[in-house]
Length: 266
Figure 1 (tube, helix red, strand yellow):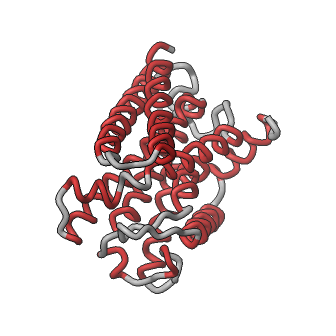
Figure 2: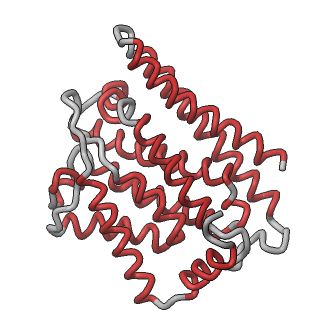
């Protein structure tokens, strides 16, 4: 580890015990980072949903800030963007973005950050590599589930069309962002307690791991279903495209399934 356990523990204990002003500043900082990530974008010709760098910061916000301020950072991102700060994808702003085709993904940011932050602050067990993999991939699943629902409603798409246009093309890139977030979170999260964790004294450790294992199993099933749906849509795809999707989706399924098995038997 490049960062000592003592340094990591001191930072997170300070973050947990810091006053409201400091926590709010951190939340605003992560909202800003998410806005910057939104400008790193790539538009595809067949969908109104852009590929952006937001998801990395969304996932990391929960691990770094915890459930309340992680979710607050994403709520600030959504609220300030709706009020006119041009940091949504493409430099857009306004309430119409939240009510439009991509608004569900932004709402998913709040839910994903809260989930990751809840487990990271509540259970020491959630800071292991397997647990962080489970949580980050689950966060991606939440973002796309909410995003697809609103996309289908606003654009009047069927469920299969919403998946084809708003989910399947973007999962591989966000799998890589999730892995990057896991690399950072496991490098900075302490292995000791800083937030009166429920399993700090050993009690609740089995329950925490079972919960995390269930999350990993659900995430594995989610990516497996999406993988088969993607394969069915690639009838005329080239070898390179087929290999890319197969590698990324398979990695997500195998990592989640492996994490579920590992956490369940610990």
